[in-house]
Image 1 (tube, rainbow, N blue to C red):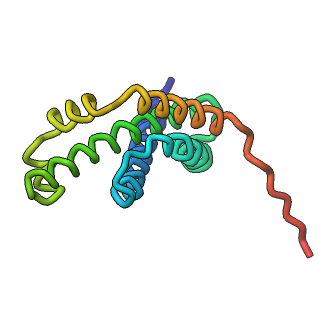
Image 2 (cartoon, helix red, strand yellow):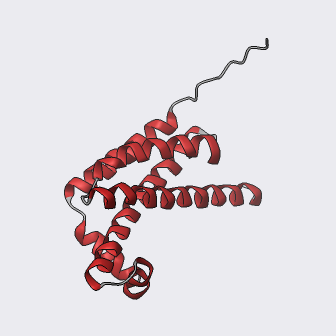
Image 3 (cartoon, one colour):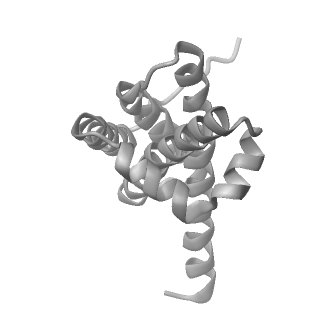
Length: 147
């Protein structure tokens, strides 16, 4: 591999990670609104991340599948971290950013790990599988007709 390819693959990994973080933050909104965990949203989040990664991040099928799986796993972990931060902010009376800053990432990751149930892990795995399948599918060709 030449340096240009390595930099391109690292940038694709960075883009997939950022998409995963954004998807986790968006996943938090219906979770807070409905005031209950929504682990089944991992499947549609994985599917949408697969489409986004395939179209905008990486065009190769297997690379896109791997990147979509990583983005889905990041989104699943990040939503649990954010839920832990929201719970801490509610219990302590802090704002969300203050609670995240005060608790720190190691504590939030530990709380997220403790709060994950086997059902959550199962749905996250299903979301990763949906992301892989979605990224491996060939995109539809759009035929345009000239009037």
